[in-house]
Length: 296
Image (cartoon, rainbow, N blue to C red; front, side, top):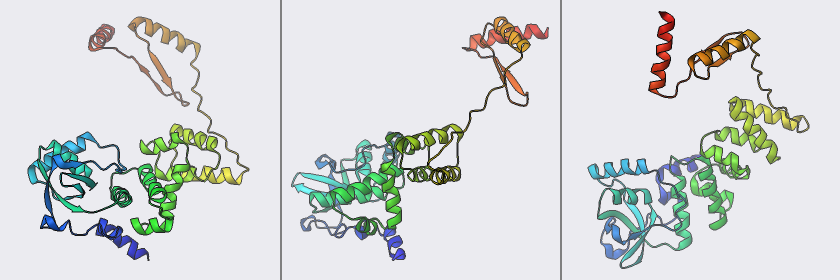
């Protein structure tokens, strides 16, 4: 069973959705048609709402050089209009590249099939974050009336994998945003899902960021929390050593001398540094002049 699911990923959309690779409308006369871009409209069911402009421009440059390698897939609405089923990114880049036509497969699909094909095609992308994948999974369940088992078969993933993605949507919005922005990894998030209290999830999330905890460390924290009567003690913030009075006097003297807010930093061992900030190149030249006078 597992082997079959893995092999489905390499077979494209047609292996996941029955009929997706059907021949285009008979009157087209061939399997791939050149469709006028002006007659194509976007897919209202497109689950992906963000398209990286830089990546689109790079693809447009490639299209100018070598053309469209993989045709997009359309459905025919009427004689003068087509709607994108899959390939909106290629469509957008082709417009940027100045193409007037684009190679496409044309097929018939109802709205529900359109949504399902768009979602599955979206999931197969390599640049999606975990939350985008989870949302697509949830939409397939809610709007296409799929069970998790059906969904597992559709996308060629183990059911446990599908479940792990869906569970991410139970996390607070701030943590979901952190996953999207790569502040934390999916591994961190999967560990946090095992805590039911959202406030505690957020508290540990803040600790992850502050202390740069590894996934293994977070798993340990969550395990200890669940085993120890839901108790968690945040890591104590390291106290900066206090400067002796004479150091403070020196700090004040140097700040006045350089006419800049000097920064003293010292660790627990007594090692540290003196930082002289400057606000512009002109200010830097002024400070360098003062240092030259000290060497004279």
